[in-house]
Length: 593
Image (tube, rainbow, N blue to C red):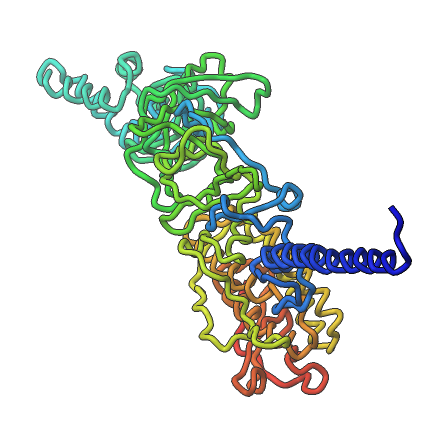
């Protein structure tokens, strides 16, 4: 087929027009599809702050708290993660020191550790008394611990009364035929003084009264206490010494008030004695003290031990254990003590949940049973096979508080207070009414006091840096302060002290959370006010310092409202104004160590 030149030009134009139309139609559709896809990805992506995970935004930008660039979450599909749970990556769990424990059944055996010592058997203690009044002319028992045998002469006594009675005996003997009853009465009088028949016969045969009379031991045993010395005057019935039979001894164990319900008469005690390493002993409780010592709050449990070879010495230290089965109608599930957090009557654990989207932890209230060694029985709240956080519980709870999830201090959840005004980029101390802090004197253990020392060292260093107007030094120190706070083990605080410490910790955590991002020393000094208030309250309540400290006050700080701080020195050095008003202020009170 032959085409002329005009026809060829028309075909080429038609083809070119078709290509242009196709590009416009299909190319625009592809671009539109790509644009729609990108918009969908952007719309679904959630952005957060690496330092403040409670921040959630649908677009990139800056953190309203610290100003850092927001980063995208690894996934935006959280549809199957409980909104009340706190999610953690595997690396975050490692950093936080989180480990878990699978809940299982317990054998219900409570191991109770007891301390005690060997004591003299009180049933074998005897007080040797003088049956003759007079002066001790000779004493044959000379030291504590000496063995005395029954019938042995222990002392000689000169007695004017006995000398007179002997003269009466001699005179009555001379008229015994006329007054036999008088003679018998005088002899009985001497017998009452434990004068032997042999001695009476000797007096009668010689016709002379004896000057000294022996006192013999009534029982055998070891002298545990001497009461008289040579030349002392004694009355009839007065104790010369105490003697003990050590063929049996008592092992007395101390029982704390909280352990009394688990120990009963007839329980077997396995114990060791420090003087005999490698040896073990056992015995049965024969008696439990019905009274509690009001000073030590302990009772005693007694084990009677045969000691024929005198191996056990009074005052030897003893350590024992009793295994007591806990009677409970509930399931005997148990978890490690470290897994449980409590405040007042509320006890909680964090339960681990795993899904395709990752690992999360959710708070759950539990009802505790007895403490079995290092494990608590769980009466309600958990099922066998569930996993709970055994270590790192406090770190997870702190993250839950920051993220506004249910936590130990707030079961309902809610955003954590940051003590800052996030309406602008500049941080400002909250003007809300400050939390009431407990300052009543509360006893804590020496371990708890030791754990607080790094926190106080950092606080006093921070105060000194502010005094020197050293902002960079203050930034580094408050970071150290926050780190020291995170390392304090809350389980060292028991009873009421635990509840009080949690309030202190919450306030300190709240007021140091963003201090590392403060831009100038003025705002750092504002943050120092609530921190100082907590440190002062804690010092009054716990008395953790080895030396006295001083509460100092500047009336011009805090916009002329006044502010306190704690110092180791009695001399004022103002951290709120530094060199410009270094000596402004006064010492308000001394906290005695």
